[in-house]
Length: 315
Image 1 (cartoon, rainbow, N blue to C red):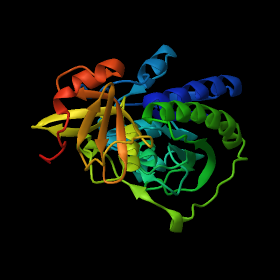
Image 2: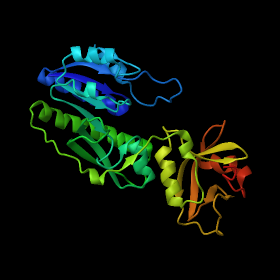
Image 3: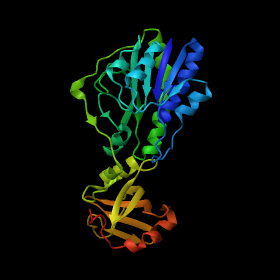
Image 4: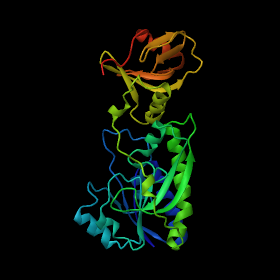
């Protein structure tokens, strides 16, 4: 079998690792690896698919447009049996999807047909979901709508953050690929149409989407904070035009002080609370724009100047 692999980030890395191992076992060949050049403005917190491929002496390509006719012609000349896309960020058009004789497959970070589209890891946390997963499916021109081959479930705990869930998803992705590739090459894998009536779709996110609305309930704000905390851009509020990032928090069901209006920050000893539309949020780690992140014993002194202030009013 001849494979073309497209991938990026930690899930792309672990899937390429697994396919390298399986290709040695089956004497198959990865004839090209397509990935992205790291963007200078992006915080690179994940492993490099490019470096892994080069370490195994594989041909690596980083086209700005993988659908350009010249690049499609190059891929066609490689005569692939399969194309695998694992967290590759660019849409692949029909000319590429038509190239492999055995199919073009994508690994998506949700239990399709739910959470089609961008950033499913962040969206499931924002919505407080107790369960997510990964879906390997055949690619069609319409994103994330092709027939399913395999899925794996990943439970979400109330304490999971973007980082911990990413780690779970990465481990699950490797197991799914290791289990499924032998079935695909033996033409023994299922092909199950998605129930499009159950589909939900969510778009991409920007750093501005991390702005906190203090009128929302504490649980909803907590879900936003954990969904976009490190390594993502973070949830933030403002005071006098300066951003204040909240990197960790919890819904404080033990708060016994006077009712706090939405956005009001109060400090007592080493504790920092902020009122919300429903309930109270305890702040555990924060960062004032232009300064270092603070947590633990340093947190309350660092935010003392905000005591009694209502945050986010400038917005």
